[in-house]
Image (cartoon, rainbow, N blue to C red):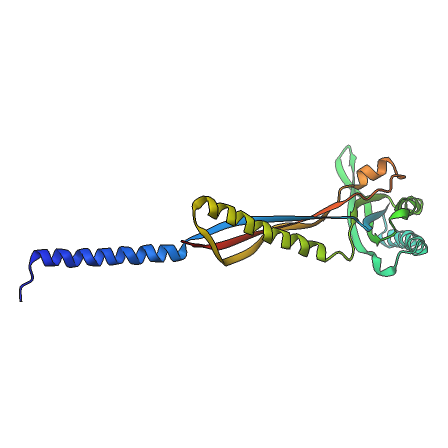
Length: 232
């Protein structure tokens, strides 16, 4: 049986048209809007965290360790007397480094430097200046990583996350309105970053005026990526 060329062309056209319709339908099903949402919550710090560094220099490690233990014991005893709990005092970080001095023959080793870090967390904000003054008198050589922090505020980040979700939804609706489409169901969602409380006041500022016991506020942020399906 013979088929005319015109029939063949018509059949081919129908196949191409059908394939195009299927592609358009598939594209419509896959059409999405990607947005990023951000949320932030302000919280007031109710505690502080600080790292105290004690150092000793000498030629004998055993003697250095004994001197360091005496200093640490005195510092910990003082911290406990200020109402700081043992569970909020960590003093296991120890470092031993060779000490070098310049000589006419070049740098040469001359003994060792033994250091120990004591990390302290306390919710007694009104006495932190007294605590720092006391530990400095008891052998602490350096103070660093002083931060005002927030304890027992785990839900602050959750609140920021909820705010980020609402922000993402509003952004998607705004884009959809301008495009003349509607926002459909959520296809995917993920956290794209964020932070736990960021301290506003650091140890450098605190050191300028020990009497200014003002923790200020902290900003807890959350960011998410959300993909919504487009309803044509």
